Image (cartoon, rainbow, N blue to C red; front, top):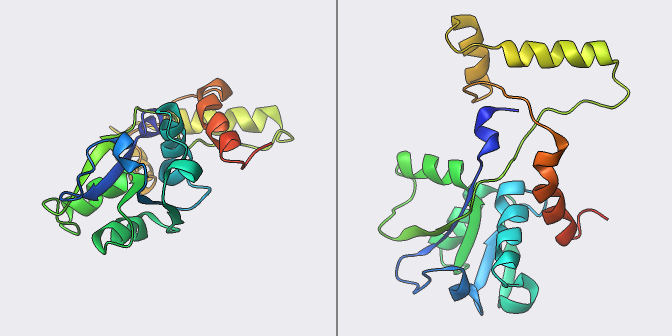
Length: 181
């Protein structure tokens, strides 16, 4: 997996004049997530809400699913919802590109880090081929210009090994959202 994906985060945003300062303030509010299957736009934010004893279906006035991180931001900006959760990298990109006014919309909660994307192969893939792919990805060196170009295409600083145990939190979040049985 990319090194960046070992410490992924999501953010919750709201209009600065909304009075929303923390997760507890979301009770009775209209809240948007991204796609229902999005790790950073739904599953992990929902998991952190549950850990804070907030049950979205019971505690929110309405739940919306925007389908995309940019649409999630737009739903808060337009006032369609009171607050929303999204991928922190998308939020940072919008802020850096001045696509959102942080005087009007701000982050009121940043999740703890979690493991996100990984490279997976089918269990039937021959072990020697799996090992070659793993070795090739882990050997990419940002100091090598050719390697750096490949890493840049994947928005990666480098690749690091991971294990299934790193994804137990994500699996638990998917189960609690009803996406896994």
